[in-house]
Length: 128
Image 1 (tube, helix red, strand yellow):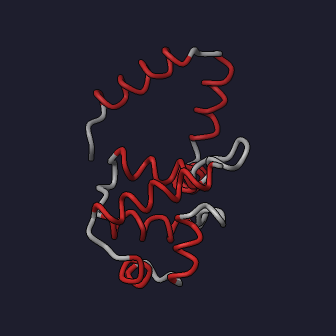
Image 2: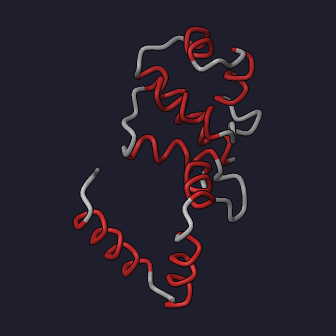
Image 3: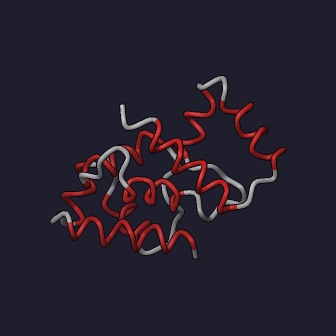
């Protein structure tokens, strides 16, 4: 029911932003029936990074916000071992990412250690 979680999050976010279904569908260039089906978990969330970005932008989610990240994460939560589209796109065009991920894998870091490493990176390299 991961598609339903995405749909519920999308619907709640859309309503909170003050959009009706038809107005939001038009703003994100989607058929209202498709948006309704996504929100009710009848079809899978969009996978295209451009579509997800358009949704996040229309909802007013800042680029590095938790809401935006959650939207992208929930979009692929129905897939086994899938990366969120924004992460996959970044990894595909950033040469050092495979090396970084293999290094993390080879070190067998715990979840807590990865969180500490993430905190360190966020603190060391403030938003640019």
